[in-house]
Length: 391
Image 1 (cartoon, rainbow, N blue to C red):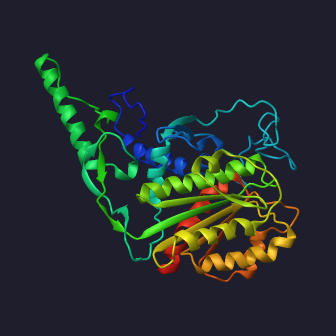
Image 2: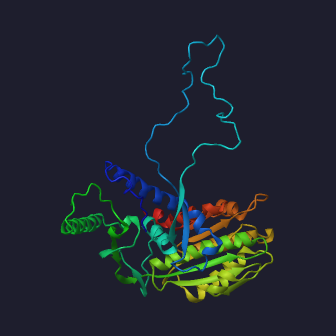
Image 3: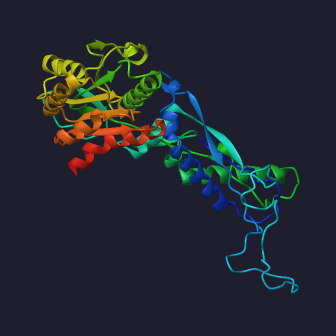
């Protein structure tokens, strides 16, 4: 993905665009990262293909120019005819800051760039890594080792930009243009010859497969009545982004899906991301089914176990103590247990605070998402937590 400004309007102008282009690339990347939270929390992201495109607003860069500004406090210029008590430098009614009417000042240039879900995941992978998996017995899961550069391609993300190859492509195009002008009997001197999108080259990254420890992700989601449509969509977005990222990192990793109200059910992936239910809430029901699944299929001696639970934090009070005991048990058999509380109620104390007060196990990682835009920060915290503990 590359975005360019048109620098060919005045070919005799001194080339001052190099720094502008660098600042522009930084601005694009900054906008992408700032908008990650909003994009990843979109309801439409669930089930989308890697080529799905998302629009991101980019605030334009202006050329340097002199503008009239307000004088500093205590500094003003008069005409010489002022009298004692007159105020200098006061704005008229049309220039007052408090004027809320229609303005006549120039606005900021804002345009949109498009980025695919695949490119979003590339940015995530560049900034983040999964927790290191313990080496278990039968290493059957095939993972992708550290990537190596294998040639070049015309599409990619800015962190993989091949600068030298890009300059070489531009130089070759410039020489070709000179030869064409010379053959036509024209002046071959080129005052400006800016980069074009066709010049851009990115490193092609190739991964080498290798055997790695067994790993299973157990996704547990509260689908009770307190989880309204907004919370359920956010929970599904949370799990979808998490699973998409993990699938990019590991091949053949096992996934299990559990949804619960007062009763927990093991469901398939499609039902997990699309089926809606209602009813009361027993958090312990989902956790206990996960414990049963671990006991029957995923021995901690063989498997790296990563259960992740998402809820709004509301629970029937009669189940609170059972839920706390279940969290303690699941932490004992897991590499990490993640608890995500989404858009919690502001009228009551949720389980997030109970768990953090009574669960002391370092393998317990809790995050709270009070606004949709905080989803990405919560995912980063959860995915990087165990790495920090190991360092």
